[in-house]
Image (cartoon, rainbow, N blue to C red; front, side):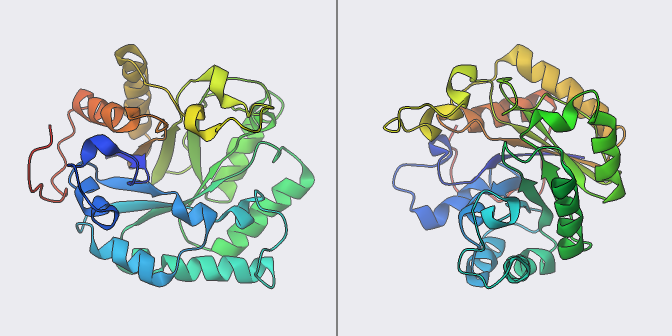
Length: 283
């Protein structure tokens, strides 16, 4: 089964009629896509009231990919206002309860920073993540090329399999150690994740100019039909070895993610029955 969605639901303006309130956007989004990546959880562990609200605003078959809090992936230094790393993990897991109880948690995504390279400490940290997350569904995305270089690629894949982690396959610009190659390999029979970040090579690396709003251009990219055909082939190949293939468009600096998501759904002839009912036709 193939599930296609976008990162977040607030910035995809083409999905919403004029005047739609922010608090109503998720319900509208769910009329177009069957899953979503929750980005807000990366910046702050969400209170249970928020996650319960999101669960209640979406149809029964809707799924959430919840991004791990930045303190759990090494993006944030120190333990923030938490007494320990362990407390941080436990607080995060509490926030997942509404998703789990409703059967709407697809996976938790641990996206590690570019400096998280192959090392003994980082291998041990992945074990720690497994220990803390237990049997919860977890996907791992690397942003450092060392994991996929010839000397380590096979071991990386086997290590993810050993820890029963899903592989998050990243499609992104190739700019050296701060990016990873496209490695379309599944590490688990149940699920695999593909995240499409765009191929904006010029905008991918943070500029020295501090005044530049880098994030506004980093994911500014529109996949063309030829590129989507290549991605389609990869998805269909992965579907043969994995029960569920999740595809998330993260090229949302402009308005391209929603368009590309709909294009790919059409190319794959996906007609999801579990979508929320649309109140009006927006397209």
